[in-house]
Amino acid sequence: MESQPSPLRRAYRYAIYLNPAAPFREFGARWLGRCADTGAVLARTAPGDGRIARWTEAPAHYGLHATLKAPFRLAEGRTPAELDAAMRAFARDRQPFAAPLALRNLRGFLAWCLGSDAGANARMHALADAAVRELDAFRAPPTSAELARRKPGQLGEAARRMLDAWGYPYAFETFIFHITLTGLLDQAAQADAVAMLQTASGTLLHTPMQVRDVSLFVQPAPDAPFVTARHYGFDGSTADGVGAAMLESAA
Image (cartoon, rainbow, N blue to C red; front, side, top):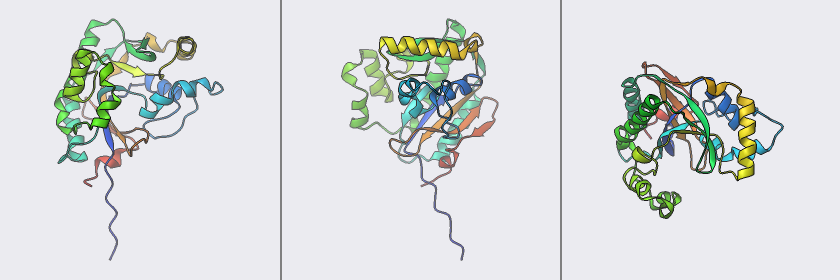
């Protein structure tokens, strides 16, 4: 009698991200030194400069992304396959759009943020709001330790309300779209990182980013780096990442 394969284990946490389209995806992955689709280590934008590794240690852990719905544990009674199906349906309800980006300092770290296009800002906000609200049934309530890591005592009133309601301080009225490129940097390091990013990226920011899919990332185990499970195109297409097998597990 043939032995049956062991059931695939579910991920520790899931996250609903916008993984930027090409050419932003390729440049950003090389800047962070890691491909979230494959989990592979990549040659960095400036491989001889060890400062980039220090600057990008925190964002590389999560992979290149913009947060739509922050990392969460799966709610009791929900399965990864159900979340996958919900993501497919969620993506099919969206329409593609273009979003101009700009490099900015956001709360002490560098990120690609939205430019001044009011229409793109409104559409991105609507996309994030919908992800937070429509997929919240899959989010397990945060533990006291998870809430404490958000340092609620240091949050403003609106951010604290979002944390209490949605498990993340930056949603709805406090949401700011950003694709994180560095961890927290002092003023001198910020200036150096800005100069390096501007030199390396060339004319990248002259062309708007195309928004035509959303992505489900998984964290296989506590403290493990996040990887892509699946990209969900607004046209109904999908593309798998290295973490796709974790969406098939009923364990």
